[in-house]
Amino acid sequence: MIRLVPDQSAQITRTEKVEFTFDGEAIWGYAGESLAAALIRSRRLHLRDAPEDAGPRGAFCLMGLCQECVVVLEGQPVESCRIELQPGIAVTSLRHGADD
Amino acid sequence: MTDPIDILVVGAGPAGANAALAAARHGKHVVLLDEQEKPGGQVWRAKDSSILSAPQTPEGSAGDALRAEITKAQIDHRGSTQIWQIERQSESWDVHVIRDGEVEKLTSKTLVLATGAREFVQPIPGWTKPGVVGLAGATALFKQNLSPPGQRTIVSGTGPLVFFVASEIRRLGGTVAAVITPNTRRDWVAKLPALVGRLDLALRGALWIADLMVSRVPIYWGCAVVSVEGAERVEGSQIQKLDANWAPKGETWNIDADSLCIGYGLIPSIEAAQLSGIPISHRPDLGGWVPDIGEDGATSIDSLFLCGDGTGIRGAAAAELHGALAGLSAAEYLGAETAKERNILRPRFNRAVRFGLAMTALNIPRPGLAMLTTPDTIVCRCESLTQTRISQEVQVGAASTNAVKSGLRAGMGPCGGKYCQTAIARLIAMHENRPEAEILPPMPRPPLRPVSVASLSGEFNYDDLPIPKPAPL
Image (cartoon, rainbow over all chains, first blue to last red; front, top):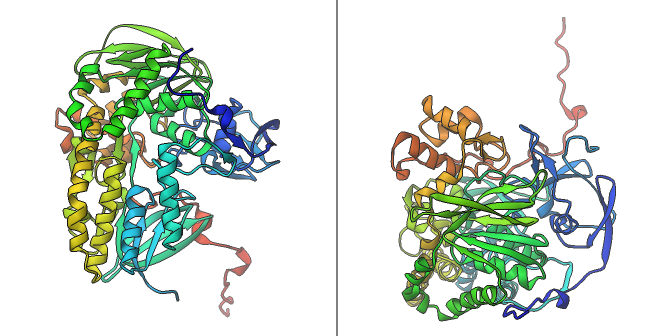
């Protein structure tokens, strides 16, 4: 296929893959990237349920304004778009039925 | 005690960073605050530490050059810092900030606000589903993480951003299912005179569009995404043709995708300016409500200067120059001689503004776009309030955004009203049959960003409470 904008994804080099858990499930990401980016790549999109109508929500503004990507890390609610992924962290969603 | 701060700059995007650099060149003690870890703002957001090497982009080069300059000039840059309150004292400004959960008060002789913008997304059915991200939001993912938002993405919205986002998704290995834009080719042709003024940017845009065309990615001009399909996450979107007023008309069709980027232009972030006591005006040509400013970022308060997209959406090139002008104005206020320098910068700023405003004009939502929000659509994401619920509140007498906010909590949730207030103001204007310019945004109240009670109260232990001795019987 002809393209004028080349696919450069193969030219990007990243840190080593590290494991972490999301609702107890082991997934991987790159150390130092945002937690939201790692969750989006692994297609863990449903991060919380809206408090009023329990509708599924996930990362939306990706710049620390909307609070939709909040998850629980070490007992604290954190914006996943503003948190750096560290190896071995245990992240919990704010979904009903998820352990928290 | 450290030296008193001469100039405190809030926001390290193109405007704020250049304000800091310009003021520092005149020997002023500058502190530059920003929410992000590294300077650059949203437009020149830095890559995260997981990226070891990657092909350079124009945004990446501009950001890297700016960050190098800030390091070289030894600017006191404090990243990952959010401001939540601004207080004007008789001779200075107190700015309350939070960093790593710790609160601190900074005092400065002058204040330069370069708070940038956020994006407007017209609420549509299903826009709260996981997998829907803002159009500008998606660029944060590209610039910081070099990741696409999904495997197959619909890109929808106005102005040049929709083509930049589509192009970046393709560059980073994703697939664009379709580009959907309310703008028509005729809208773009009308902007040719302004585009000629920035041929470099115009040619880059032309390349993005040409790439989509040769690669057979469908571009639907004069159309909008009218609803998001999928049970628990995005599985596709319904598309519909728009009339000249941007109201949906005719049949709809479905496009399958696992993600959707959607946005209708930028809105100046004016809360900090409002909190500082600056009056605001409604200027659709500048992106909506803007603080009133004079030449070179001066305001009605002589120790306060405003610059960049937070004063009207003029684009990054104009923001750089506007920032430098405001930084120089602040230095001038503190005794420096900057008139000559400003006289040189001002015509360059005015040229950049012409291009920037032509792009902003493509983003101005036409009245019909509001019809994409159906009665059952959630308008306030934080409180899950539908358009019907908000309309009911307006019909029983809530004739202002403040009234809707206190009646329904629309705007009191964790986002602080950043993603609902424009749509709510338009809804009030429609019900009351009044011009949008009469429906003021809500009065911002501190905290401007969420602050935990724990960080305000500090380390607290019940045993530390002084208990007075019981009074003798």
